[in-house]
Length: 122
Image (tube, one colour):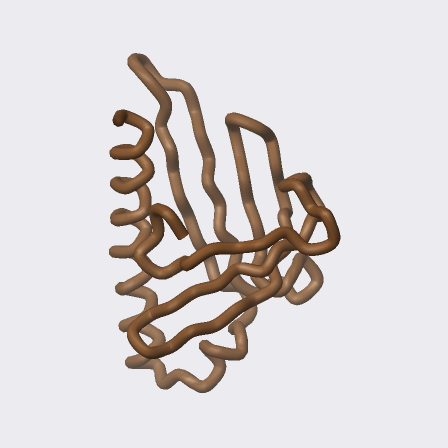
């Protein structure tokens, strides 16, 4: 919740620690809407990759990936998301609402990366 305009925090489930296969509950807020989703870590390579999937690998809903790669003078961080199967919150959206949500998410990705960069450089 520290860097994202939408995430308000998360907690590990059953003693998870961020390893592949671990679960956490992610909490989000957008406007008046608040929701919590169980997420599963799909990849975890310290300093290189952290990927999780909303609903777990079996439900295969929304994937979020944070990839780090060394570049001259520092590190490049790339955040990606992709929707495979619609989450419950997305299922009821019209095409217009979904397109607006996707555009918002793209802007949110840029804001998150900027906030992480500012924290890393401070």
